[in-house]
Amino acid sequence: MTVVFLHAFPLDERMWHEGAEAPRLYGLGRTMDDWADAVLEAHPGRLVLVGASMGGYAAMAAARRAPERLAGLLLVGSRPEADTRERYAKRAETIAIAHERGAEGVWDAMRELLFDENSNPEVVARARTLVLDRTEEELVTALEAIRDRPDSTGAYTALGDRALTVVGDGDPFVPVEDARRFDPDAVVFPECGHLASLERPAEFRLVLDEAVARWT
Image (tube, rainbow, N blue to C red; front, top):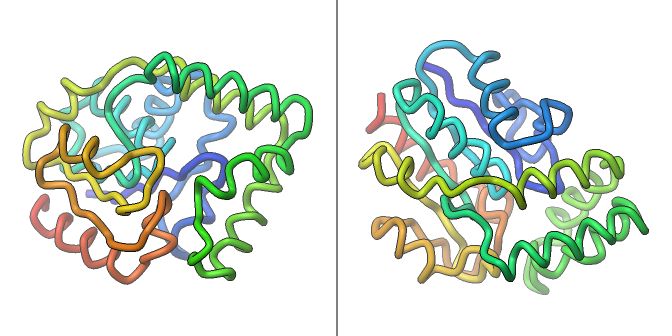
């Protein structure tokens, strides 16, 4: 069994700990299903998928397409539902920023959503470095894949105790009440924003290790 880590937007696989089995999703196709198929093909056998934000959407696509392959699924600041009309419209705004100002513009637009004023400056600086490596094509393709993903709530529910969600209590993208609606057992990290694995690495690792131990 392999634990595979799927990264958030607009970061890349370097957001995870050194040595993690973590593919770069950009370039694997144009849709979440493309990405899921590429991950499943590259990592044969039983998997635990750990998906942060956008990576969670790719993990959910894998759960829809090959649920029998998943020993477990950990969503981190992510949700199984498709975009609402409001979120769909916000994607268009961010796509326009990516076209006009590239990675710097996307970072400027998202920085206060990813982190707050209490976030560790070293963590914020590291994230910024990863974001600024993105090309316009990577940003736009990823945003379109996020925007157009289908609903995966049924696939998440079907996993039963093989699925778990982690959120920060200050996550603006996946509020605690939303997380607990689709996962009553969701783990909530206090004083934490959207990127829980970066802001609370020790606590996150403990939750992950306990989950993997249950699933294997």
